[in-house]
Image 1 (tube, rainbow, N blue to C red):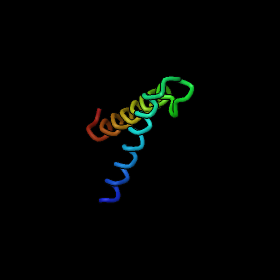
Image 2 (cartoon, rainbow, N blue to C red):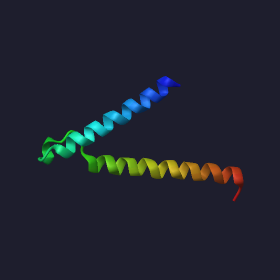
Image 3 (cartoon, helix red, strand yellow):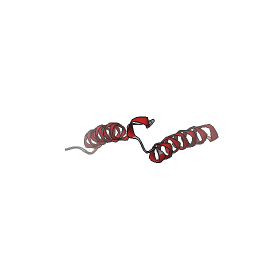
Image 4 (tube, one colour):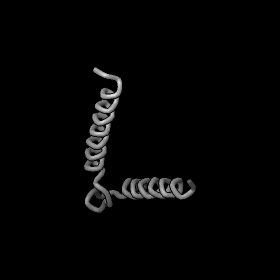
Length: 63
């Protein structure tokens, strides 16, 4: 359990650190991450996960 918590915490710290570094950078071409692309991909993944969840619950509860 500690390993899973540590892994999730490490990923979160890495993402936050990259975001903070990019926000401090004045020039857009020197940024580490293209946050617009990240936003689009996360949005698409969230939409897909929501559709899978809705299909799953529809199968269980019926139409």
